[in-house]
Length: 210
Image (spheres, rainbow, N blue to C red):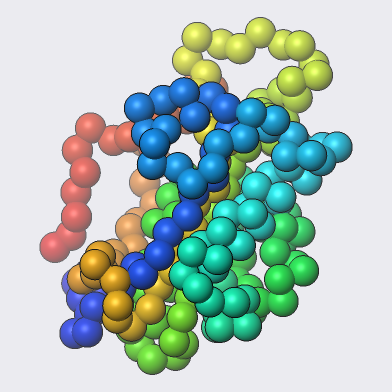
């Protein structure tokens, strides 16, 4: 079975937005981000609330840059790394945009963007936003040890970025077209080191069937 969905009329990414934390703002892509925050609490009193605020600000930014308002968005696909997508749900609840929460770990942006593309290309909706977020501190609490615990990180531990991204998908009007999408299969690579998530998600050979 051909798992590639090829669009006859490819939808377009008409606008994007990204907001990151201070560490990400030091990297080689620093000039590509819309905003860089040195205060990674984003004015909140918990890491989870900080991530919600980060994602909401990014979604509001992509709407602002597009010249639209929230009522022009038909549906929002978003997710994060927290239980039950709480970062997304609490972040966007006051926007009153129809919402579908999605969890794909490190593939969440690809998952939301692919799903938004299918909805727009099929004519089910006119405009959709695909978004995701992660926060180093909330991820440490979720998957490893809370920073307050003061535990020593292992040499193989990954660092989750503090960042959020959002893309507006429409039928036309953008320079970037989404020609096709594919939804992959689950693979167990036999990685037993719970701290080495990178190895579990990076097979030596990437096979696309057919």
